[in-house]
Amino acid sequence: MTRQVPIRLNVGSTLRHLGTLYRNPAEALKEHISNAIDEHLKAQAEGRALAYCDVVFTLTKQAITIEYPYAMDSREFETALHSVADSAKKSSNVPQIGSLGIGNFSFQQLGRKCIFFCKKSPEADTICVTLKEGADKAQFDSALKRDALERSGIRIQIKDLKLDPMKARGPLSPERLVHIFAKDFDSYLRKGWLRVRIQCGTREYNVAAAPINLARLAEGLEKVQVPGQARQTVGLNLYFDPSGKSVVSIRHMGVAVVEDIKTISAYGLEDSVYATGYVKGFIDADFLQPLPARTSFEDNRDWITFLDVLDKHRSQIEAEVETLQQEEREKTLSVIQRTAIEMAREILDSDEFRDLELPGGMTRKRLPSKEKRSVPSGHRTGERSKDLGDQKRTDGLRINYSEAPFDTGPAKHSRLLPGQVQANELNPDYKREMSGPDESKLAYATLMIGKEAIAFNDKSGSSDDHLERLLTFYFRVKERIAPHVAIPGKRGRGRPRKTV
Image (cartoon, rainbow, N blue to C red; front, side, top):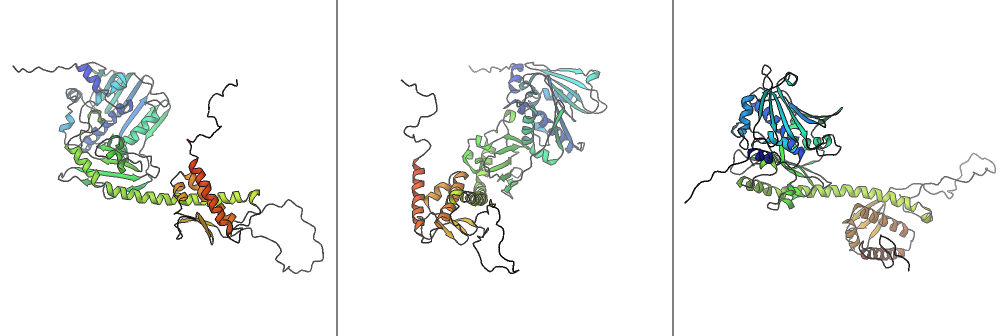
């Protein structure tokens, strides 16, 4: 016999669980900015929005206070409490950030009690609503005179804190909050009407969108139409970061839900160009459905469609990144070239090499004379001497360093051309050193300049072959002495052995 058994919930425990679903305390705190934005968007649609939506956080050891200029009356607050996990925002014609109705309970990740002071309009009284951790009822009161608000808005006080907001580098430190808020609400901060301030002690921190001085990627793809869906779009707001340390976030209604795309294992997305670190920015997809506390998105048909759109434009972005990487390599190489030339000049200017004759552009700086000038002898005639004497040039053509494939093949490392030292791109030692860090590239370029400066002194040209062999020998030795190779007779770090 089949029968239906009703499922009952412990409301207090369930609310505590819902209020602690956030990734970290800062993520729970930013729910109040999301609520402020939703109220401002609704006010914009109704033509009653203020010029700015100011959200102010005040941090003390005892409490966290949040204030912004939009509020609910008693009836609206009750409706919100009756719609937990089924927000009334879902039925709104205005697209909004929140949709689950659990934001008011996010305080439980920060403290044990939350008090809301609300004043819907200038002529309305201030109501006071108290929520407590683990409680299944909310307490409604009229605010005391000392707590009454002077103007329309809301003041939220989170008390009995579980964390100290005043702790330097803590999870609720002002610096950390500024960083998270600036990143997660970037799109609204750039629009100009959202302002977020954090007051802590005597200091005030202003949250602002970080400037982006990077090359734009995927131009023309800022709003891509989803196939077969007239009202669904994907926005690609991407930039090239030569450092390779950036991340791409996925946003819903302008707020980052997935902070780093490489944390997602889906259709190779975590291994794509979007996750390489060379792409920075945001991907906007308002049609996706965020999971509770916006930790990710529901894996449904819309999510699969979204991945298909990203995959369709992946090759274009890969090509753009590759082109910009090549330009960056050339720019970096030019810096290495200049540094190598200056380093070679300094080394060849030392005592060990001062007897060498150098190519034009590599001539040494004139040393300050240490001897007293001799007293002129003879008679002055008023005529200038025609004898050239033994004066040496103190300057020359600026020598250049370049890299090119040699027609003669890969055997030779370098050659001296008029006004420049040229390295052979086909040489296997060049290929290996150029694939290493900048230090290896700089050392290789400097070594080639030094080799050609030394070979320049042998007018017969025979020393060039010997120096080439010496370079080959050096790089073969370097190849064999890897960091992990143990050198006989050399002890590692640690306590010395006792002598018996």
